[in-house]
Image (cartoon, rainbow, N blue to C red; front, side, top):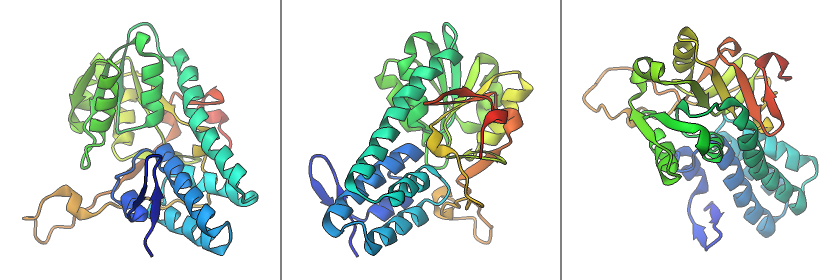
Length: 276
């Protein structure tokens, strides 16, 4: 079946599921919002019945790790209707602005920041508080170079950027006041985020640098278990390594002892006070 993706400017016929799998759409909240917009078009055409539930399952199977879309769909299934879907979209969008405002408390005058991967919540917080941000060190975030999108967003907002390879974080941590990352899921066992977050948190802890997460309450993950996505080996671009086993994990889990606090639309909270 061909998936129809609705855009504000036109209706484009494309395989939306493949766009999710290929990381054409990035950031947990953006994935959720665009998927809900896609489901809005689907519901208009086919309603909120069994076919709608099947389409929700396909979306969740495409990106099983991030919990934001899962939680959003659970809200809709409680009372499936257009107004409920629209409210969830609005809640997701407003959460980003409110979290950015709450993040002002973690930035001191002229703060040097280090961030990893691409999070619309992190970008929104940095843009909102740009007057207190002196420079942002952005990791490349291999193998899909997701940090490039972060760097471009910040440069467009006239925020100074230093772009580095992932493995240089230990060399640049001394030039950092705080580390700020987004979240794909907040679980009892730790922060689930782009692979490379855990070692970055260890480097920050070793150098006494605060490590903050900026996200929404939609990332609280109460699922019994989580599927950690493995990306295609082809993304590593080493065709001559015949016979080698290639692993390309998309996420890792950072234990809460490395996290200073979590900033959401509801305020700033220490990990010990999160409830699952």
